[in-house]
Image 1 (tube, rainbow, N blue to C red):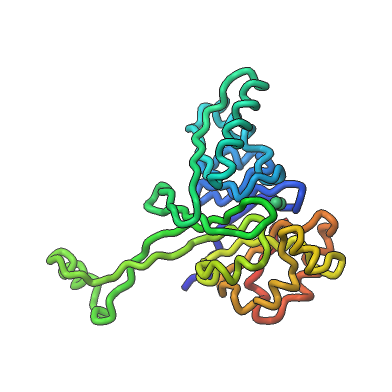
Image 2: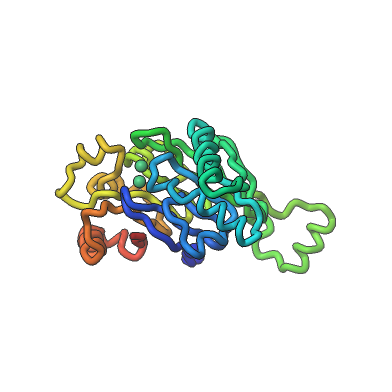
Length: 270
Ligand SMILES: [Zn+2]
Ligand SMILES: [Zn+2]
C-alpha cells in the first residue's frame, strides 16, 4: 500500500471557520469560509448547521455563478435542508439576484454519486445539534488468489474469454467527521479502515475537561488517545482545534502527546 496522502488544504478552527478542500475529489468539507481556491470545487458536504460550518455557502455558489462555473451541489443532513434553502433565498434577495445551487438532502446509509465512479455516503455523528459525517468510497478490484503470478498477457486473454480473474471490493478513500463527540470512533466501523480520517479534536489539554468537551458535543484529545487502537493506520488529520490554543503551541502539544506508533501518521489542520 502506498502512503501517498490525499492532498487537503483549508482551515478548521472551532467556532471560527471550517472549510477543508480535497481538490482531487472536487470537494469541500463544510463551508465556513470560501477561499479563492474553494470556489473551484463543485461539491460541498455540510456536516451540520453551525455557522462556522455553513456561513460561506451562499458566497461559494454566488461566486461560481459570477465566474460562469457549473451550478454547485451541496449535500446536507435532511433536517437542515429547508433552512439551507432559505439561507440561499435570503442571500439572493440581499444580493439582488437568485443564487443557482443544487441542495441534496442525504441521510446516513444513502449514497450520492460523484464523477469518476466514486460515491459519498454520510454516517451518523454525535454533536449537540443534528449532524453527520461523510465518507468518499470507490470500488477497486483484487486478483483472485488462483491467478497470482499469472503474466499480464495471459490475464488479458483470460479476461477476453470472460474468465473472472478478480473480485471487487469497496474502499473508503477519505472520511470526515465534522463536529462530534469521540463516540463516532466506536460507532462507525468504517472509520477504522478509511485511508484518510479527518476528525475533530477541539480540545488538547486540561484547559478544558473531557466532561466539558462532551457537554459541548466535541472531542478531547484525551479521549482520542484512550481509543487510539481505533484510529486507521494510514493517515489521520486532527482538525477544528479550539481558538483558545495559539497556533505555535498546537503542534507542540499534540506531538508531545502522540505515542510512537502514531507519530508520522497524524497531521494537523489548523
Ligand atoms: Zn464547529
Ligand atoms: Zn458545531
